[in-house]
Image (cartoon, rainbow, N blue to C red; front, side):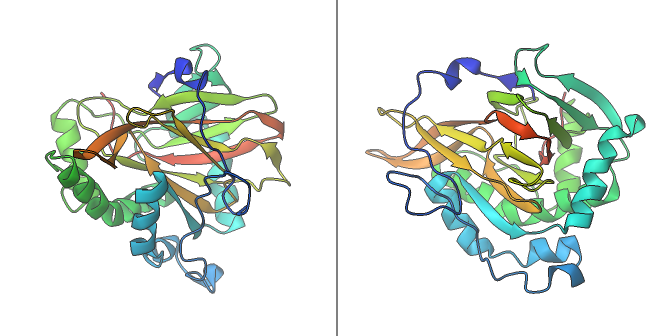
Length: 278
């Protein structure tokens, strides 16, 4: 992850909550969008599951929290297949030791070309549904919306601008590992939303390791959101900033994300970033 802002991890106050645990006093708790969307997930292709997400409700939740959980879009077997790629060295263009770069603790790997088919198809499927949200956010902030309908065309624009390195990542956290608050920015071209998919089951494979999102609010204390990511669930979240209502209409609220300390076990996640890197 390219920009780790550990300074943003301290001195921040606000409300935090755990998704799926409503009723926590003072908690900000994004929920699962359209929980009944996948009645028979094992009989559907992963892309079909993405298409069946309640996208209108998800967009509303993104507007409220800056992040939104989906139903389970991968089966346990599919999660195991993807997390199992971590040990295949030739799949990746780079491996990052977070402690070495003071990003936190743990390791993640950037997939190289060719991106594994399941990863590439998920990236394309999510992009198609998130483009309307990205364009709506840009309109509210008075910004241009350069994103075409298809991911392939957007990546061609990234490559023409010198951002040619693929950015899908596979992350592994062991006991004691964590990730500092940061943004995944790799050049001038940025898609405003990204996705992380849980590949292990919290409470069984690991404890701790909640996904953290911290939003800097205009003329106010920062707001924190904590999300427990279940196996096969995806969390869509803000990459850099998002529109929030202000006295003047709409303002851009800067957002950073990270991962709390893993207390036991191993936590794998798949990160889908929609702009490539310089």
